[in-house]
Length: 473
Image (cartoon, rainbow, N blue to C red; front, side):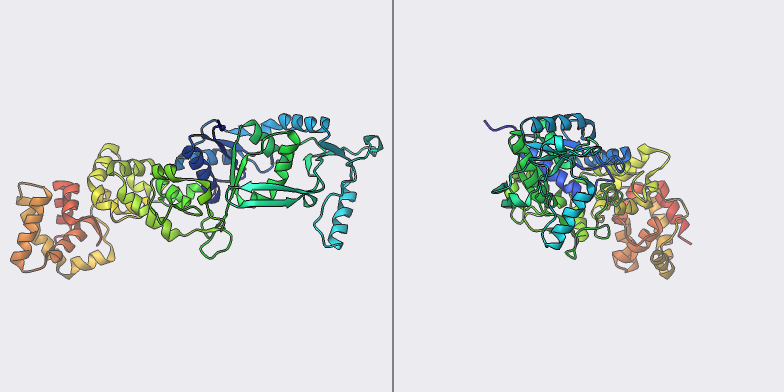
């Protein structure tokens, strides 16, 4: 029976979880879910100068918010240095590695010679077969892999297909530096093996590492995991993704009001497809996801498409779920202060009542919050320019005419209020919109809002009448 699938996401904690990393995590998470396996998280924190605890926290929180939490506690690569060194001792004992005493000056000379001869710089193997007794005094050796000199190393990649590396191009890479610290190449292989990783899914910028890492697996006598190198994300202009394109941290997308379900839906479509499906639930993704459908070509990031998908998921979300999201995001959204009212229960109540009319007009939670602002506005309302123009152009008379009719109404239901306005419009021989527009302006200070009768119902009798009185003269 095949081993249970184990994938891993292995970020370096030198900054936030950026959007390219989030997509790599998503592909690992989906593949593990699709195959009934698990996804692990390894923090590649060997660069002590640049690794920070704050970045580790940001990465874990970003994954949690996206709904891509790892299935086990994170592993620190730095804390496993002793284990990495032990693996090298094993390779030395088996003759698969050797001590190299070449000085910096010698290495520099090798580089210069290669440059002059127009060939890639490679270590020339001068300590491969020399007796360590010839070692110069005072030089601490590095330990290098004894790589094969002939033939080729083949990687059967699930995305890129068969990739061949001539062994003459893969030099005797350093496994341990002269201070005894393990190199990234070594640490990755030992960690993936010890964590039981069966599938390595990562960006295709690591494809050149795949050949060298395969040699380390072979030197240790370990099974090489299945590899899948996924294309990088480019900006809409085809250039490598940078901050101006949207290579921001996941938290920036949260602040812009995107939903985790929408980001998952959008990110998976950057490089993977299932027919022409654009809107895909997470359950469907798990059912459909597989590596052979990942494209080889780079995907292009498009904010407009992300926004359209986000708008779909806002409309498809239950009112109660959206209210929860808004209340949970108050400290994150730039306009979240609007939702920080004295009484959370009444804030929730108002949002829930207004949500059916609000959610159809919003593409992000920021727009949703903005649309809900009228619910909590203090009287007298600040008027948008267009709203003030409607009231000044005969609108105040309409409000003044309707006010006593509303005051006299026994019922404050949408149906009763609509009947009053329709009846008034008929008698005044004006279109319904001509009566509804001034009402909307007076009640919300804006020209766009949910349906005006819904607004009256959500604000309630007392608040509605008070706002209308403010604008009736």
